[in-house]
Length: 249
Image 1 (cartoon, helix red, strand yellow):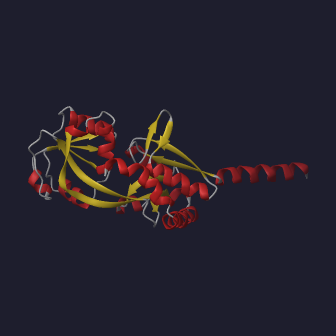
Image 2 (tube, one colour):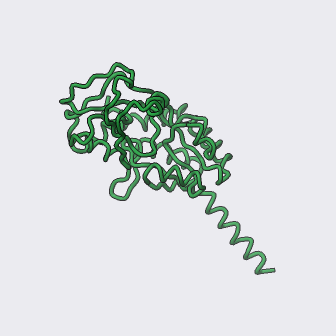
Image 3 (cartoon, one colour):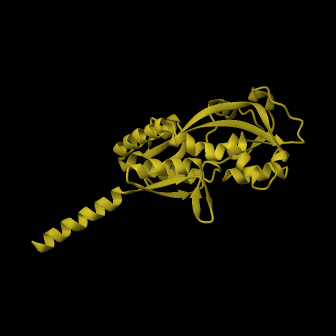
């Protein structure tokens, strides 16, 4: 009997311990999420940690190449991923939150000495080489241009910082990036005057946290949604965003 109760207690504490933490994956994408000196920081990181913290769940976050992070969710090797754009392909293996985690503006960037202009139609850039981050989705208009073979070639990078470095050294004439991610990356080297954002922006896209369907976390997703909604209502959500965004306005 004693062994029986001991086994029950072991199972109880193991289950409780598991329930109080969640394994999250993301990519190096400042200012939204990035690893510095062994610590994961950023706008999205602070929002996610606050939401799970209110639920009594410790968020354990790993920064990975984006394509690998997506694969982890598809294969059930991690609980959830952020910040992810919603696509039909990803919805096959990921349960997305209903509440938007963050809105992101997608833009094209060139060196400041470039004479290139943009009128909003990607077809006017036909034949150019463009830098992108591997596995990152840049919205419907971008997907349409890629499917039509608008660009001469695509230069792949594993993360946004690498993509920006290629632009700065002239390896590619143009890159596509999240607006604030691009400014955060170039600001690290104090080269803000060396790039120029082409206007208009390509798209304004909602990004989410998405849970692996193989982990059966629909209830956790619903609880996260409710908590995130409360954060937006009580002002804590906007306070987190403001601490980062003011630098780039």
